[in-house]
Length: 535
Image 1 (cartoon, one colour):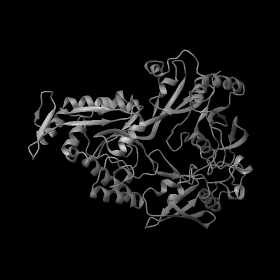
Image 2 (cartoon, one colour; image 1 turned 90 degrees about the vertical axis):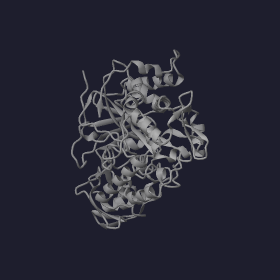
Image 3 (tube, helix red, strand yellow; image 1 turned 45 degrees about the horizontal axis):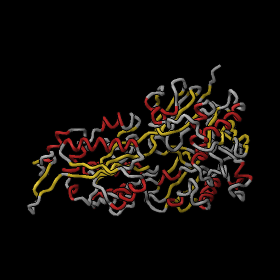
Image 4 (tube, helix red, strand yellow; image 1 turned 120 degrees about the vertical axis):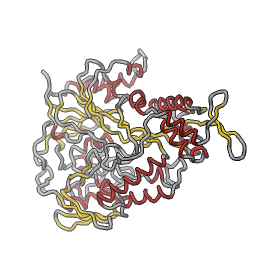
């Protein structure tokens, strides 16, 4: 989604307000002045941190990985909707039991020196991942893949540890050359610091801790690129990137969409492209609280959530609102589920159905329990104080729940204390979020005893549906299984799903073309971009 706006307005209040220039900015100014004269009109300029290696399978830094994606193709790609697309692989076929994938490589795919990309390279790449550091970007591949074998020069078989519907998503790892890297896979070996590439760009030069220069790869399988040269500045961190982008030294920067406005001023000529960050926000119920064992009460809370207002005020429209824990743009998203549109009349009806028909002198609803005691409708909402958007959601939820007869207390401790309370179950409602993996698996959040099931939810039927979704084989079975799961989750309502937040790729308006960033690759489609500098 593309959006443009001039922003030196109310978001300016988020800045420090200090008149004295921070030391980090002073240092940034010095760096800026020293490199600004090296920029040429034809250079497209990006940034990354200092790389310890340029071998994409040994690299441990996310910013470096973003740049290496310009130089190396993945075995199997992934589009914005999460579906697999060709990379080094042309096509693939899954065995009936879901444990083996037969992969056909693209014909005519070459390394930058003109030699062909073969099955040997894919097998060697997997073996390199096996021996990579535990915190390497692609190390988790070995959690899913048990072996990779060559069946012909252009075909490999990949064996999975178990049948799992997300197995194909794990194959988004770069393929490197066996002939070039064999025996030279130390992190700082000659080969690791001078990569041989098969993507749209190849390395022209690298100045230690200063700059990486890329040029178009003449042997790239999809033809000529629109931007022939890229400079990658080595920067200290986000603050340096922000300042450099504001000064026109960088042509691109990625940031939280809600925060993006404070980095711009009204005179900057910038195009911005929002995409999903993978950060999923929700309101969760603590099922240790007997009150929320009653589905009517959970649904009453859901009907009291003003999602449209939250979209406008808390997210500033930079979010994809969702009715399930799956992203609404995902190929697995089910639209035909129970949705809870803001409706206080329905909320009041459900509370009455649950027995809360009377109110005390403060307007708090109450009901008589079977043992003759009186129960007041009171809840604690937990949220961490550092998250501005979630705090706004918690405050709005407090107001709305009080309006239908709840006695509400909001607790907003620091994240450390928030996490401790969440783990111990010291809350009734929680406004929280998860950064969801590209490899979809909802079991840790909703399965009985799941690692992140802090709401203490347990439902044998949901456990079975989660297992069915995870073990589904093939697209048809997977779509059906996730459809069934989402329908039941929306009915059972362990979470009130809110939104997937957006990040944004900000680009100089000298850049044009089909800009389609996604969370897997923010520079997705860069080969089709063009750069036209003004006079």
